[in-house]
Length: 240
Image (cartoon, rainbow, N blue to C red):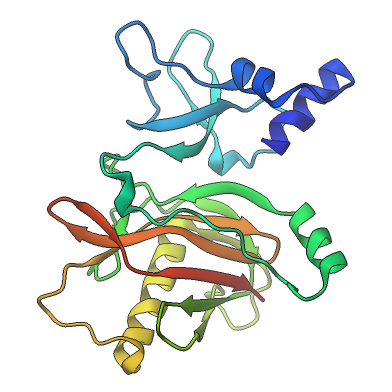
């Protein structure tokens, strides 16, 4: 929403009320109850103007006459009680001034792990991540720190390297590689005793993550079952 407010301010020279902003930008269903062709089912999308500041990898163009540009802020699910709500990472929690400065540069637009089929989420135990598009994301860092904070367990941190070459600088990591690296870090933490997983347990599935300045946080992750996703953990990732 801050991005949308910033874009609209250029045209109005003032900040408009949030309810009016939603009315102007929100993607509504058509008379048949469908979203514009090109948007995933259940998507809660808002218009993204050319100068909105939204990264190209987060833009979806619908195949209508206007070729509208959208970004997805949230997704409706069949069983929302089984989804872990996104929470804001609080860097420098004991330093209010620095904390507010960091949060002021926070990009809360979720980065979604969509499959080629349109399905949302990817299993952590997937043998291959070819089902995730190998396209660049807005995430640029040389490495990430994955911090696992699970109820009744001590915090565990795992660092992952985004670079594919030793001397490679910061570059955009692909969605496919990001999913693979995060999944590998979680599996590694589980294998060293953080939590004992048995073959009979359903696979864990990651759905999205949010980018906070120099950090990534997994916004929703759950246990895949016949009835949906059961909340099981909260993961944050810090870019180094």
